[in-house]
Amino acid sequence: MKRISQFFYQNSNLRVAVLFTAIFIGYLILILTRKATGFALSNSDIKSLGMSFGFDQADITVFFKIRTDDMIDSYINFNLVWDTLFGLIYGLMYVIWVSVLFKPFSKKAGRVNLIPLAQVLFDWFENYTLGSLAQQYLVDGIITSSTADLASGFCMIKWTFSGLTYVLILVGVILLIARRFKVK
Image (cartoon, rainbow, N blue to C red; front, side, top):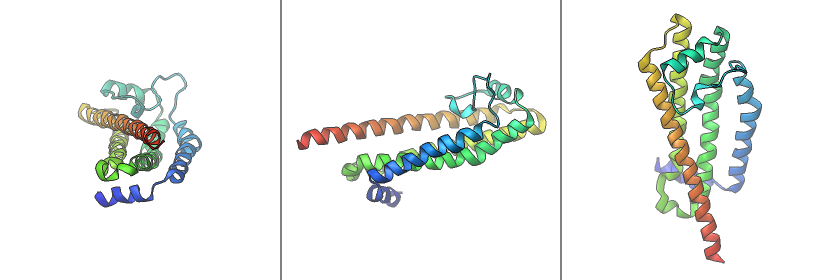
């Protein structure tokens, strides 16, 4: 892990960060939102289970019950393919931004630049578990409580790491500004 962390510290710069941000925005707008239309309902409060901070068995059941089998198949495909790729894209983008912001402190900061990868990992666990729940629902119409709780737990951990990533970016920006004022 130390070698991966050092790789990102050494190879990340503002140009690469902006490039990955553009890739992130492009993928989000041009691909991910379009792939989500296959299971989206205009009158539903819940667009995707992974966008909320946790959910329960009843939430999942309602989510699937109001959708057709084709829409649930689309949701499975969304989670196992398109959202999985999105996790990789946003994870790399965040690792690069944290690496850029903490590069001057890389010796002290250590592997802090890899924290966004934890968000990706738990997003993938959530996606796989939600995909399994959707497949189970298509087969027998049942959502197991334990698997629902597992998916919800992965989702909450994902959002916790997301918040931590934003805090790191904010701290990095503050440190950057403080260094600029200190130099002048």
